[in-house]
View 1 (cartoon, rainbow, N blue to C red):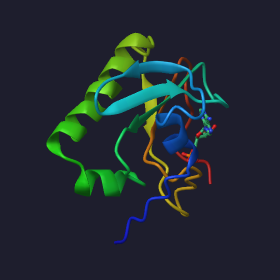
View 2 (tube, helix red, strand yellow; view 1 turned 90 degrees about the vertical axis):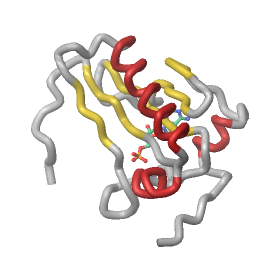
View 3 (cartoon, rainbow, N blue to C red; view 1 turned 90 degrees about the horizontal axis):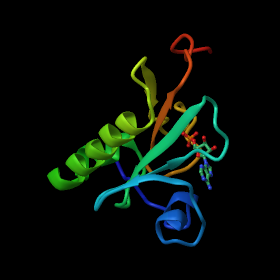
Length: 120
Ligand code: AMP
């Protein structure tokens, strides 16, 4: 699989500071910020700082430190955002997964029941 990365994608531009974002949490390897079009009371995107296009790319090629940093950011967001009642984590991937931004991101959605898993 060739994971060609487009460094002009909007999340790459956010990471370079070219576009503002509503940061929730940041560490050496990940950034978490609020989705610009929230679909639940809590809607945070967690992204790695490295150039990874998708979950499978990140899972294959990220270092142990990057993997740990990303998961630490997920844990921090969940602790900070009051999702004790539960949440949904989504990683849309490529065409069949309806991915719009080609930089790996995990949506954390919560603050209300999020409905059945898929509506196709
Ligand atoms: P996906 O379909 O998983 O690629 O979703 C991309 C998400 O990025 C969508 O939920 C958008 O609302 C969100 N998004 C796009 N541009 C921005 C931005 N500048 N700041 C925050 N979220 C954004």
